[in-house]
Every structure is written in C-alpha cells, then in structure tokens.
Length: 266
Image (cartoon, rainbow, N blue to C red; front, side):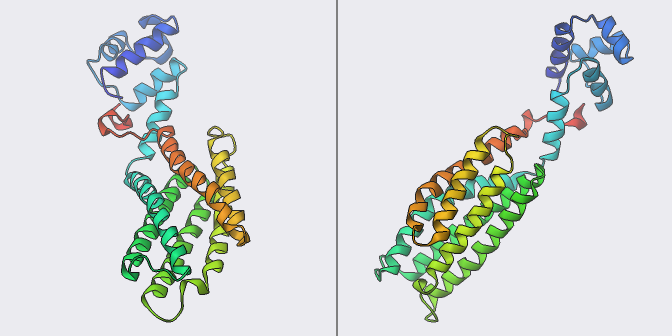
C-alpha cells in the first residue's frame, strides 16, 4: 500500500481505537512528528516501522496481505493457466465430439486437423494443471500437487498415443479408448480428493468442486457409465476455473501491478 493510502489507513485505525497521536507514540516508541508525517502521507515508513504501528493498533490484515502478495510474485503461470483452462474447456467439447465420430468410423474432419485439436486440447489442460501445481505450493497442499502432476503425466502420455493413432497405422483410437477413459477417471478421482482436502479452510467451494470431480471420475473409471460422467465433469471443470480465480483473489493477486502492496515500499 502506497502513500497517502497507508497514512489514511493508520489514521483510521488509530481513531477507531480511540487513541491520540501521543498515545500511539507511547505504544510503538515513535515520536509524534513521525506519526504526523506518516498519517499526512509525507513520508513512506520502513517495514519495521509499519510493523510496529500495526502491532500497536492490533491490526495484521494489511501486513498479512502484503506478505501473501510478495509470495505471489511472478504469478504469470497461474494467469496463463486460467486462460489455458478456458481454451481447453471449449476445445474439449469439439475434441470429444470428433472422437466419438472417429470411433463410429465417421471422419468429419481430416486426421491432421483432429490431431491439431487434440494437441491444443491436451496442451491447454497441461498448462491448467501446471497452474494448480503453482497454487498447491502456495497453499501447502501436497495432495493437490501430486494429483496435478499425475494428471499432467497422463495427458502427455495419452496425448502422444492419440497423435500416433491418428497419424500412423499401428493402431486405432478404439483399440485403447476404454483404457484411456478409465485411467483418466482414476486421476480425476485423485484430483477431486485433493480439492476436498482443503475442507472448510477457504469456504465450501473446494468441497463442491472436489465432489463433482470425484463423481465424474467414478463414472469415467467404470467405463460403462462413462458418458454419464460428462455432466459432473463439465460442472467440475467450470468450478475448477472459478476456484482458481477465487484462490488468486484470496491470496491477493491483482490485475493491476500498481495496486499491489509491496513490503519493500514500506
């Protein structure tokens, strides 16, 4: 938080506590002139001065937020992951539709065009999962990190297999289709469980997203009822994108760098 906003905030907190500038000085061992200049926005205090003032005013919100935002620097991957997740979501609709037609022996588009759709679909989801790896590290959710890495590996492997099936005559999509669907179901179950591990730490949203993802994973893993899994899977993936955006705002991610709080500026 830059001046004069910082000075105004300290002044508001002091008045809310019913303290005069002289009384605040006694609580944080600063001189009156320093307090006056900080509140007037004439100087930018150092981090230890801000910390002393916040402790004297029994306020930790801004300091905690500044630490979060400092830790969240270089978050380009997460924002890229959101964009990739949205692109993946829409491309996957076409990818699934064309795949069903290929399995039925109907080639509505060329194999090259279908291969490109699969490349962008798989690559988009991989970027989306990389963003979850980044966020999992921030929130110390090792389960989510493992599940995201496992999903990345599955997408890279099956993506390569699909491309080989489309561009060579070694095998067809139908030869391994159910194995692929079941394996993705297993990894979706792991991913869903990792979301539920947040429990009530960050509202009930991760729990809902986790349950939807688990239900989708169970249907896909069963193979027979895989088609029924598309409904909870669609809702779950929309929820995952929304949850990622929610987590970014929760830890202080901003769209404008000028509005970020930086400890170094205190």
